[in-house]
Image (tube, rainbow, N blue to C red):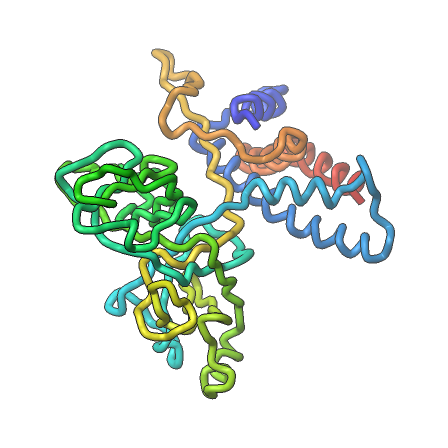
Length: 357
């Protein structure tokens, strides 16, 4: 949804009778809050329509509101590998969870849908720092043929931080897939062609960590409550296993059980430490904060600048523009102390609520 269109509409409503001026900074604050309000409301609407469906009072076909809401929510669905924290960096893990592996959740996560683990580590190491060539993984100390690497296996750059110079993924672990192992490479089997450029050698001459996992072997990690994990881990009969792992959510951290398993070709034998970036989350992220960017003219009037690096449109569907404008008008009316503008927003929101009900 174009943020400039929304701003122009809001200004047109607020300035109809010269009520007051809205600075770009204030507009961006109201835009962020209004988008967040609507984002969270999708989940309440979804729950409401699920209940109606159970009561057989929902529509179908073009009147299938649930399908539309699912499409909107799915647009915020993403996946990311989780950063495993070394023990010195783990803050205040609850007592009894010290036997778990602790991971950092992405900074933009709103709701975790599923957690997966890649239990079969083919090989790990560091790239040869003297060479860098596009989408190639080069390690002169390895023979990827004898390591059992196969086309389609998951390749992870474990050095990637989720920030510059790497893509801003919000989480570590730049990932791709093995396309092939190059024949004729020297040393033999030392070059893997990846599906994308994963190893950037950003500063030149610096090795980057990597891990290659069997992509055909994925285990879902089940969530359990903190009240249950103590019971599960108190008995050998119920303790989580590599076949049936589990995790506990603790703020922006998760604790995964068990902590160890065999990392080479046999996922069901305990022994080796877990590999880097072997836990992947499929989650609903927060929408990116909208930002109307501008340049100042001589007279002080801001001019829209869509080429700014921090420019960000709304991430909501275009069909929700009237509701978004109404919400922003409520905040604007409070700022300029003009009840008519605020009441306009409230009336529009109430009408929209009545229509969807």
